[in-house]
Image (cartoon, rainbow, N blue to C red):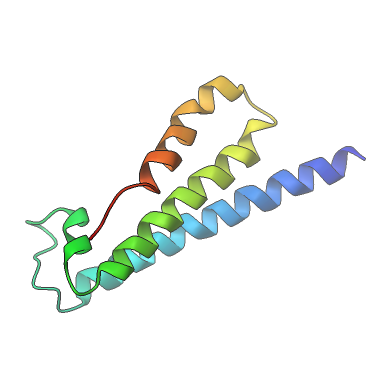
Length: 99
């Protein structure tokens, strides 16, 4: 039965990777939308007060979910205390306010 646990962790880590990659794609789309912001001069969080704030919110939620899933996937095979930074990133990222 050990392969069931390994498969579950691999699925969690893969879903986390998909979430993080999707959040990157959302950020690229936000850069090309007519937000009135220059991606080089303005902070990413500034998208939260534009008309495209839902895209920013989706990006932040995807990053938080991805960090949680990656921490779950890695936490079983590694030192869980070393993953505390990833869990804290997930909790702080998904609670940020955009609008």
